[in-house]
Length: 129
Image (cartoon, rainbow, N blue to C red; front, top):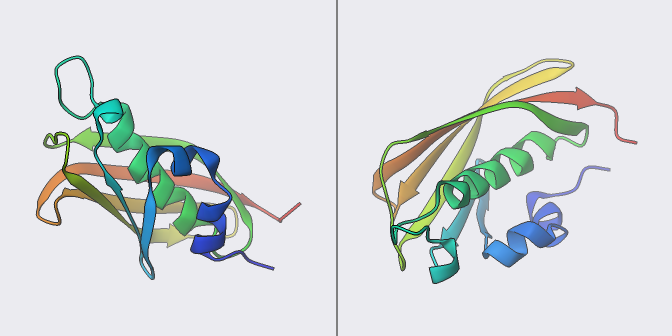
């Protein structure tokens, strides 16, 4: 039985620690408020934090069909910055899905406006174990 994005996110301790919240499940949309512990030594959002919010949306979208989908390739373009207090929102849309591979596009926006990240990811799909 397939888990919903809400159920998957509820079982993700890493996402919980980051403060990732589900905003929608069709398409999958997650958000994260930027806190002081998300910043790098320059005082701006760490690229890893932006990657993490995009990756979370990617994983939820890829696994909602019920088959186990694990990342085999990802890419993030850092198109803009963000800072403490900003809200990053990542929306994942399926680009292609076959029997064993699927590719997703995730757009990350700062405060629902400016695009600050463009993420693509491909997963390998296998039967649920």
